[in-house]
Amino acid sequence: MYYTPGGQRRYLKSEIEQFYLNNKGFAGRIGFGERPALLVIDCINAFTSKQSPLSGDWDEEIKKINMLITAAHKAGCPVIFSHSYYVGDSQGMHLFSKKIKGIEALELNSDGVKLDPRMKAIKSDNHIYSKFLSVYYQTELLEILENNHCDTLIISGFSTSGSVRVVASETIQYGIKPIVPLEAVGDRDIHVHRNNLADIERKVADVLPVTEIIDYLNSK
Image (tube, rainbow, N blue to C red; front, top):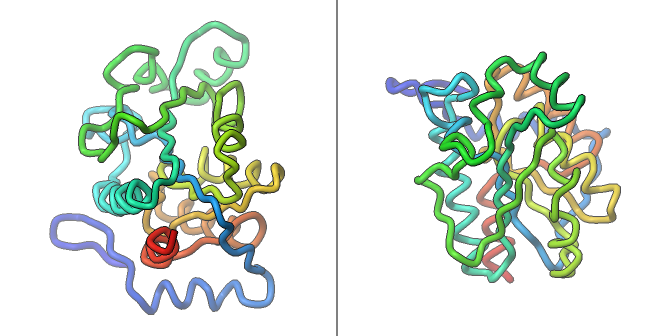
């Protein structure tokens, strides 16, 4: 991985290949199913605006996510945008706010919870709202997947050590194949990002290059 003069991250082909080599012998391959859906986690202003206390440097990842969104739309696959939000209505939320001091940027109905305007959403896409790291918890996510008979969930967005990891771990429990696109997820700490990606690949999901996932969607 290296940075461009503008500060953007780039992954070398050899680095991606080494990532899989290091996991050989431990991580098996789940594979794709027949009916995929694309989940886009927290591509919202509070996570992408440089003025937000919760933001990360994810411009390149957003470009890759948009490539997946375009391919999913062409394939007629469900696209689901999840929006984290904060309301101080429970003891759980109260405790969560002690760990994440900038969580007020996620107040419900605020601009922070709105989708980043760069995202290539269309009117028929699904939008769900989640208070905690699990996008399944008290949302319609599982219902949407079941109603569309989805057997594969492509999990993109932010952050790798948070909701991306939690959702990947939970998805496999429902008998749905979790797929994580290597260049379309991100974290605020590159070391945390890489360690979590490697562990996700070892234990709960297939971590694959975006190009391979797009080829799969194009075959639908």
